[in-house]
Image 1 (cartoon, rainbow, N blue to C red):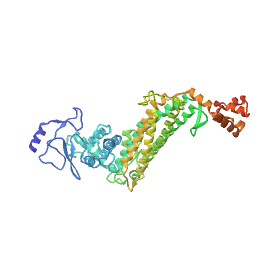
Image 2: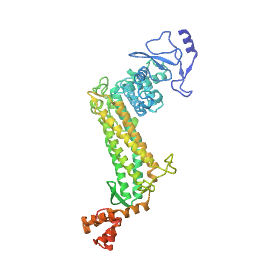
Image 3: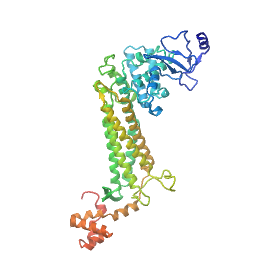
Image 4: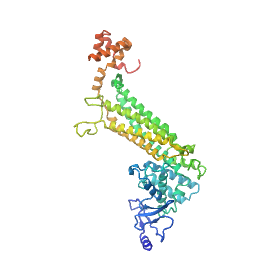
Length: 508
């Protein structure tokens, strides 16, 4: 049988690389040995190959670059399915880190041929070209060891393929000895967490919030001269402009971005070089600093080595802090979404001060109904982010001794929050905020009917008499002016002179 397999292998001059969908990237086929050695051997039916880890041999699909440890993890953690896989931003961050480590290890003596192959394979990981080779779920070891090994195996096998070797042989590129050189899962995973979080904040979250800020600011200026009635405790209050009301939303989003940016200096600190417990065992002097510098160069972000690797491995306060800033942002966006949907309620039985864009049918049974769907989506996102922060808080508080073991769950939720907030901010801006119109007829009607305009009379007739006017007018269903004259507190001319909404918008 082995002789037949060998002859078959010799007859095949070219084979397609695992996962390839094109005719490029062919390599010479390796001759199968007569007896399986102590490394990988191909199965006779060519559907899988046999690889080994320290627990024994496992079948690995021939069209995948991952190896035995990844397969073993898929067997041990069947939790949640494909929707619970490790976030791709973490995988891409690992690609950046592994390339940086290979460059630095080459400086410290790693064979240049091996280092170059690792760098090329790592680049493919960072570019998302090998996403299909990362099947592991978040719910695994709390240090992320299985995902680190998934990355090591994929890069190792892809590098082996580039060098013309046999997948799974660990020769000439070993997943531990070469790809993971001077590294531990305990420092690589938190490093990838910080890289992924920083990139998501810069690429998705902050641009989304900036877009929302600018749109709200434009509306604030557009509505600057529209005077409306204010509301406190959901009840009538004194006047303000619609522009002033929107300016509060603008400031909330501005502060949200400020808070998020304020967390980034701690996110830029990388654990790489701490290895197993923070001591830096099996690294070289300067390794940590050089890796951080290379990551900074590759990403364009100011990453530095963490000043204390023990803190960087055992605690993830920086991620809790970032999540907290996003939680505050969620609170702000919930308030903004609710205000806008209530101000736009109607069209005939609500407040109706705002006219919101009509984007889609709102009911399967009520013809013509249109709902404030963007406000609803944004408020749901806010609720999810608040829930994510609870999980991150619990995870961050459970760093035991030298290692926090809630890492995958924490980064999953941090990235989820950043993506949701950034995307929702853009959606809310483009499909709601930019199209908001002021219903000036409704605004003027509600303002002129409000009893709280009586507040302007306080300096002239005193609080008690002003309160008497308001309560009597409300009880009798009459106007403030008519009631004030009827009670004999002032003349019509005095009322017109003293009660002017445009004079009630700020300090005298």
